[in-house]
Image (cartoon, rainbow over all chains, first blue to last red; front, side, top):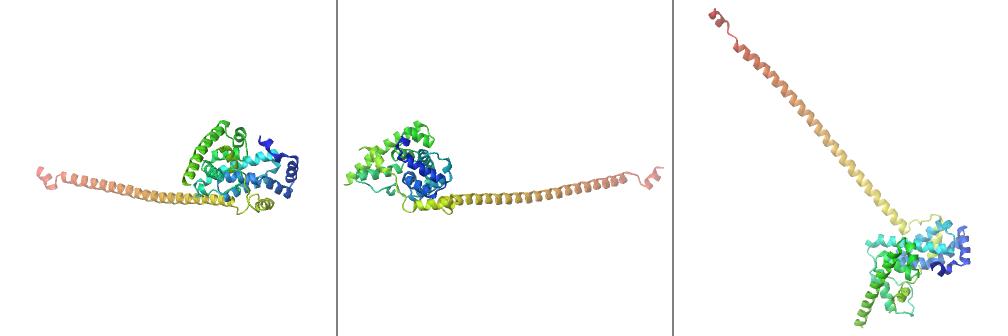
Length: 190
Length: 120
């Protein structure tokens, strides 16, 4: 699904990859621009801290630059970026767990909220996802940011499929219950 | 409330901000692969420095403990030698006293010349 969904796996992207592999810096910049929102978004949704997410994204792209020779296609590149970002983000989230960071209420806005959903619910969900432990948070992010199915997530995170499914099931149950509570509280306040 | 649909909205990809690409490309071009002074590299250096300081502190503690233990052992060995010498000297003096006492006791037991004449 991830590979099929990747509009990035188009022939033009393979040509850019070829040029980047040949040492064309401009082509590497193009590749970076094509994937930076995905990589940075994934990192930010997992580490919950903008500078730390920038560090993760930067390290991922520098690692990519060092290992471009091992990337065989645009689809492979997308898989590689998701996998490396997810692992690095989990490591960063676990490493920095003890650090004083922003309260979940202060989780940065990821995007300009479009008015095609309930902004309050979106903000509440973002806060609740940020409160999940790093592994389930990454699973949820890969599922709903990248639209990957549990088998793909399992492959990406080196995790049994059943573990991924159980993380998703539990996380959704918690998110549903807490979002309902939070929204009910907000309405009571009004 | 469709939580899954709202999660897709909440967890959209995000923009790292302006100049991110320039920064990454410049770092990649510098050939370092890892930017000097970048936060993760800095943190790693600090972590490594922490280990070095801990290792040095452990080495100093170990060396000091070993030195103190050796000094203590030396003192104990000197005291032991002095004790052995004292015991040997006392034994020698004691043996000399025994010898003198034996001689004195033997002379007292022998009859004098007057007593010998009287007996004759």
